Amino acid sequence: MKQLKNFVAPAMRAFAAMAILAAMLTACDGGGGNQSRIKTQDAAVYNTQLGSTYMHQGELAVAKDKLDRAVKQNPDYAPAHSARASLYDRLGKPDVADSEFRTALHLAPHDPEMINNYAVYLCQNGRTDEGVKRFLEAAGNPLYRTPEAAYTNAGVCLSAAKRDEEARAQFVKALQTRPDNAEAAYQLANLQFRHKEYPQARALIDAFLANFPQTADLLLLGVRVARAQGDPIAGQRFARKLQTDFAGSEQTRALSAVDHPPG
Image 1 (cartoon, helix red, strand yellow):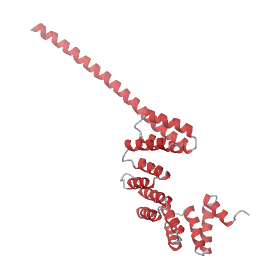
Image 2 (cartoon, one colour):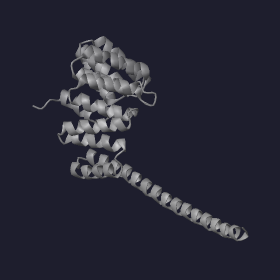
Image 3 (cartoon, one colour):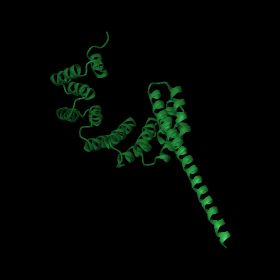
Image 4 (cartoon, helix red, strand yellow):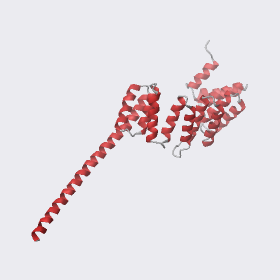
């Protein structure tokens, strides 16, 4: 019995030592694997950013290469699919673009940025009801920091489809959410101007410019509204502000073209 006991003890010690060594090797391998995965995921983020930058610069071939790499490096990275969807839309491949957007939403179903990006695509491709539904979904998401932008985008989408009364409601909602939203103020005043609601448009422009920073779009629209009202003094006041504070802007050039049409 004594011999058996003496045999078992060293064997158990050896087994324990082997188990510890195996655990250490596994831990080392797992750590290396994790580091490799992290590096690959970081590379996917970097290539997505690069691809988006190249796409905005119009270098679509380079953008495609970067975004394809990003998706290969991390197939579960939703922003890469969303960016690649926008690229395919620009390349005139709507079916592929739609598939990529849906993949992005499948991977990040509650990400308001993914929802908003898809909504923009839908509206630009004439799918108004789907687009507005997505914008309102983004606006209602508590994680979305700028719901007023989603309401404004929904209004623009509806306005493009000549559904002005529905658009008006969305612009009003955007301003109720954030009264200093210049884009929503411009879009609503412009809609009123198109419908010849000059007093309402003028009141909105005056109130906004009196309380919040002026914008070139609102000042130019102010010129047009004032002229439509037969108020040249107000028109000149808006024009001077536009020329002084936004010299060289597209809106100032547009004003100059109106005042001095080519002979």
